[in-house]
Length: 137
Image (tube, rainbow, N blue to C red):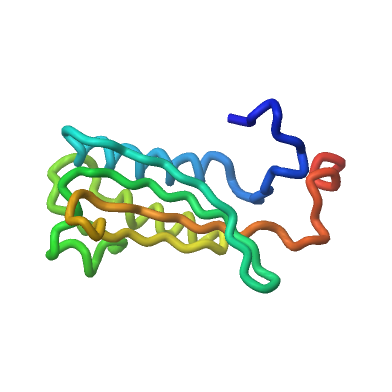
């Protein structure tokens, strides 16, 4: 949600398929809820600048059961789960969507041993593309 005190200069633009990126975030949140019976789910966003590249990073961290050792090495491949719920293709589909947008996705267990964190990174447009020019087109 946009903070009313935040100006347009504070926004970061990501050019993406709204439905597909919503699908990715929804899938990651659904998994966090499924595997966190008690605890906390945290969503964080930030902009990362590195030389001429900028990206938006969205991280969903939970305090649930974490990712089993058996699943972790093949996390974003087809049927990589021990869960019996759903089609078990969610993370594989998410990876394909994020990569089709020029981004990256990864997951890891939290260092304290409680739960996992899933992160997506999406590139922001080149500096010549501005919010104003996007609205005009």
